Image: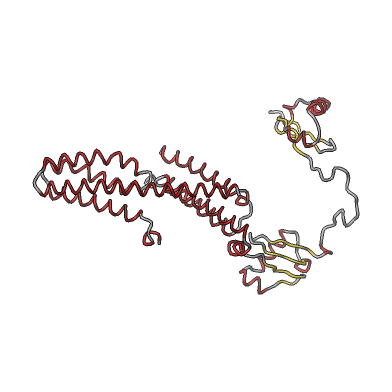
Length: 227
Length: 126
C-alpha cells in the first residue's frame, strides 16, 4: 500500500508541475485540445496508482509527453493562425441583429434550448435584444446587446468619475495578518495602519478582514469571538 | 518561450529515458540469452554439473537486473522470468531435464516478447 501512497503523491506533484508548465490557460475555460489533454492526464495518472504492476515511469512518461506536446501545440498556434484554426476552431456568429442563424445552429449541433439557456445566463431573455452573439472556441457564448438593451454606463450618463474610482479596494489585513503589498499599493504605511486600527479599538490580530482603497476609505470586519 | 524551451528540455529528457530503457533491455536480453544457450548446450551434452553452475550464475545475474528493469517494464512478465529461473536449480538437481528445458524455453520466449513489445516499430505503435 505504501507503493500506491508514494506513487499518488509523486503523480500529484507531477501533474501540478505539468499544469504549471502548461500555464493558466489550462485552468480557465478550455479549448478542445486542452480538454483532451486534461481528460488524458487524469486517466493516465490512475493507471500506475491503481495497478502496482505498472511502473511509475509508465504513467510519468505519457503525462510529461502530453504536457510537452500541449506546450508545443500552443506555441505553434501562437505563431500560426492556420494552426490555431486547426487546433481551436473558429468563433461562430449565431445571432446577427436579433436574427438567429439556424443553419449555423444546426452545424454546431446547438439546440434552441441550449441557446436560450446561454442567453438567459447573460440576463437576456429575448434574442431580439441581441446585436451579435458569438459562440467562442471554448463553447462560451459572447453577447453584444443592441443599444436599447445595453445597461446604462457612467459614459452614457456623462458622469465624470471620482478620483479613485479606478482603484479597487485591496485586502490590507487578512485573518489578522497584514498584507504589505496592499499597503504599498494604497500609498499607505504601517504607521497609518497601526493608528487606524487603534482608533477603531482593535489590534491587528483581532481583525478578520480589512480592505482599503487609495483614498484611504477602509472597511473592517472584526474576528468573531469563539462561544 | 520559456515554457517552450522547458518543455523541449523535458521532452529530450523523456527521449533519453526511453532510449536508456531500451538499451538496458537489449543488454539484459543479450546476456541472459547467451547464458541460456550455454546452459542448454551443457544439458544436451550431459554435463549437468556445469548446467547447475550456470543456472546459479544466471539467477545471480538476473536478480539485480530485474530490480532495474521493473522501473521500465510491467512487473508481470519479469515475475514470470524470475519464477521460471527459481525452478531451474531444483529441476537440474533431480534431473528433470524435460521440465528444465521447458522452463529455459519459457524464459527465452518471455524475454523475446518483452523486447518485441518494447521496440518502437509501427506494429507496436498502432
